[in-house]
Amino acid sequence: MSLLEIRGLSKHFGGLLAVNDLSFHIEKGQILGMIGPNGAGKSTAFNLITGVYAPAAGKVEFKGEDITGLRPSKIAEKGILRTWQVSGLFANMTVLQSVIIGCHLKDKIGFWQAIHGGASVRKKEEDVQEKATSILHLMGLTEHRDMLSKHLPHGFNRRLGIAIALGADPELLLLDEPVSGMNPDEIREVMALIKGINKEGITILLVEHNMRAVMSTCDHIVVLDYGKKIAEGLPQEVAQNRKVIQAYLGGSVRGA
Image 1 (cartoon, rainbow, N blue to C red):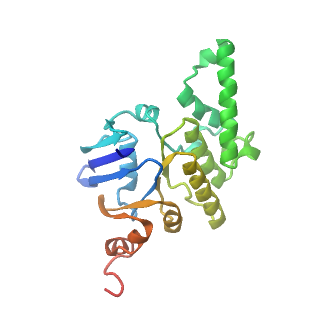
Image 2 (cartoon, rainbow, N blue to C red):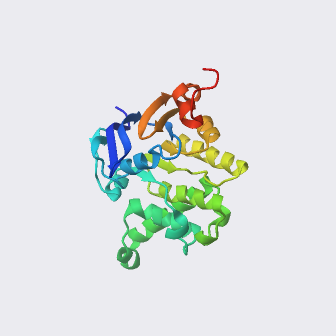
Image 3 (tube, rainbow, N blue to C red):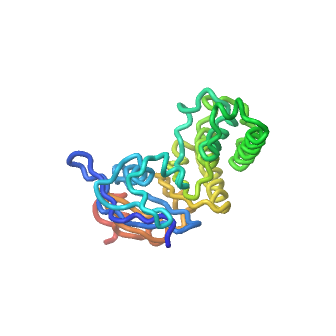
C-alpha cells in the first residue's frame, strides 16, 4: 500500500480546468517531485492534497484512508504537513518560538494548561523546547534562534518554514518551492537539508521550478501541463521525455 494515493483528482475554477483526472502515488520514504510550466496545475494539486480546496472529482487516500475534502487541520493531524509562509505569520516571534508553535500543533498543550499546569505540563514544555532546539540544529538555524522571524534573510526564512512543519512530526512533508529566490549556494544547502530530512524517515512531495534541484534530489517525478499528467518516472527518464521537452520549450522537439 502506498503512503499517498491520488485517484482521478479534478478541480475547476469557473471554465478553467486546473487539475484534470490526476492520478499518482507516493511510496513511504520517497522524495517525489511535481514539476510543470507556469499554470500547469501544480499549486492546485498541492492545495487539493492538503485540504485547502475540495476536489470536483477524485480521491486522496493517505495510508489507505480516504481523506478527500477534510479540513487542512484534520489532514495535518493525520501526518500531512506543508510549509508555512513564515514572514507574515510569525513575524514578531523569535525563530525558536516559531518552531515551538509548530511543535504545539502536534502536542496540543493549551494556553491555560501552559500557565496553570503542574509538573507534567512543565516537563512536556521542556521536551518541546528540546525538540525545537534539535530541529533548529537540523535546519542550520541554531545561531539565529533568538532573532525575530521577520529579520531573517530570505533563504533562512524558507528554512524556518520547513522547521515549523517538522515540529508537528509529519509523515509526509509537502514543500512548495522551497528554494525560490535563492542563489546557487543557498539552493545546494537547502536541497542537502531536504535530503537529510528524508533520511530521518520523512516522505517528501516537492513542488519546485528549479529543474536542476529537482533532478538532483528526487527519486521520482510527476510532470503536469494544463492540469493533466503528461509524464512520470525516474529523473533521467522524465528529462528525455518528448512531451516534457515540448511543454517546457514549446513547439516541436529539436531534432524531431
